[in-house]
Image (cartoon, rainbow, N blue to C red; front, top):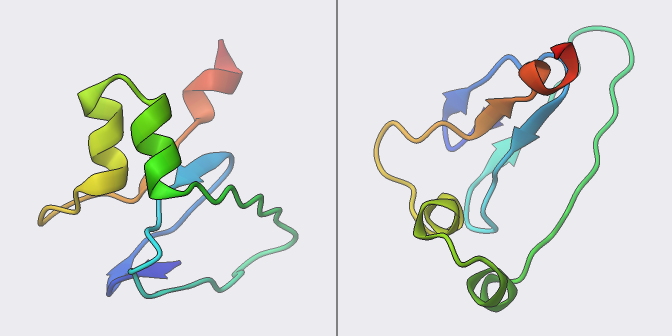
Length: 77
């Protein structure tokens, strides 16, 4: 997966945060995979999220921002 010229190897369950202004492409390199898209309107996110830290994921893209959050730890407990 490439997002704004950043390459990611996404394995297993992961959350990927892509804004509607970021160029991205996906290339499946092995077997089957499943994508589920959730599109959130910016005004909805600002209304629902009370945590500034969570809100910053949707609003800020500082240098070194990591778009992919692996969820493996959620399924190994």
